[in-house]
Image (cartoon, rainbow, N blue to C red; front, side, top):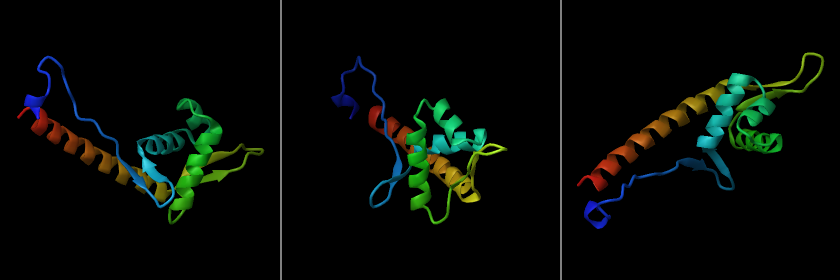
Length: 120
């Protein structure tokens, strides 16, 4: 492929990976980031703020994740005297770990393919 590309320009191979269900995206890098922030901050609202995302959008993503999973990935507690919060469940932590590992393998694949295609 290298001989087809202009020699004075630099190219790179880029791709995104996500897992889709029959009606909606289940997991992708954005949802992974949201789960990581919920886990760290203990709050959907604070995670949304840190991602510069509306609370409604973050809540919709969490709801989608929970509906498509076999068991809840994020559990929430309504506000009150002690305040509300959100907790990534053990299943959510397992999903985060699995998807992060899948993402790492995907990036390694892209790096190998980029080398093969652009340095031939």
